[in-house]
Image (cartoon, rainbow, N blue to C red):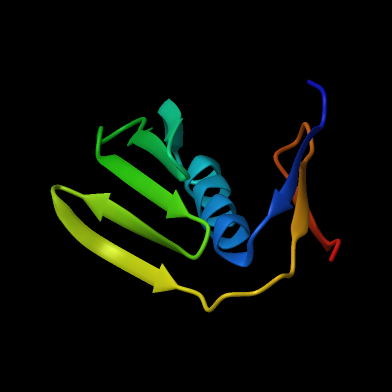
Length: 99
């Protein structure tokens, strides 16, 4: 599998993606991913208990919904800092601040 890069990310986007990779490493699989007007939505489902999580990501915040309730919401202040995130074939993740 080829390494993947994500560029020009905000801190909120990086933190949300790191949480998603943690879910993937703990039994979840990606079921759907899409983007609409600066909103990324990633839907994950657990392989054994079929629990579904929806991670919604905006440039300044993200939130995780399970069973129709917000389980976690994180907001960040505005910042001009940007990051690159690299996902290796073994699902290890590296983050570099580029600005």
